[in-house]
Amino acid sequence: MKYINDFLKIKECSENIWNKKSINKQVYGFQIQRGTKWKKGLSENELLEFQNIMGFEFPEILRDYYSVMNGVDKDQINVFGNSGKKYSYSKSLYSFPDDLQIIKKLIQWIYEENGIDEKEMTKRNISRIFPIFGHRFMLIDHNQHPVLSMYGDDIILFAYSILDLFYRDLEIEKSKLVYNVNVNFWFR
Image 1 (tube, helix red, strand yellow):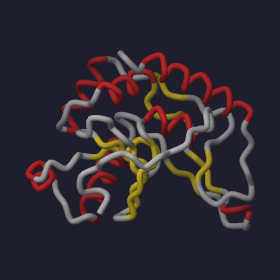
Image 2 (cartoon, helix red, strand yellow; image 1 turned 60 degrees about the vertical axis):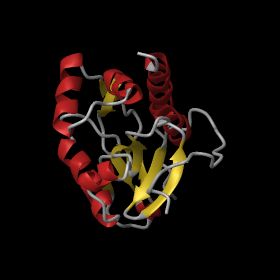
Image 3 (cartoon, one colour; image 1 turned 45 degrees about the horizontal axis):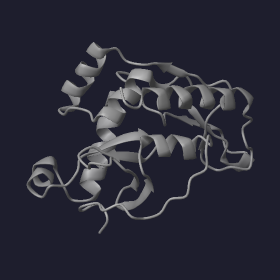
């Protein structure tokens, strides 16, 4: 419950921004559509079910996130820089249970691209990952739970936490990232 108020602020601020937001026709890449709203957070029983399916207990910050918000009600849109190409839609803010298979596939893809599996990760004390927003993954077993941008084996530190990720990516607050987080394996 430590992070509930932070997520409530993010929810309110982001929905206010999205109510006024216009799609930037010059952008290649997925954008949040005007009027997008967060889905209702998960109940305690739903959170327990989600954790059981994933096979691990969520850190407090992830539990608090999912108890306040659980993905969004609209897919994100890619207008391909107004190039004339047909618009594309995709999930980028994942919800349970709707996006469970996407979540599992993304985790497996990163593990395969990096030649690692959960057994080897446990043996070598490598943090498991969990997708939060697009290809931004939280480190589950890291004491600070930083967020990495992970696209196959292209991996960089992206945010200090889920809170920092949302403040920056949803353009609620600006923050400066200083690379001082120690991460085992994922930064090679």
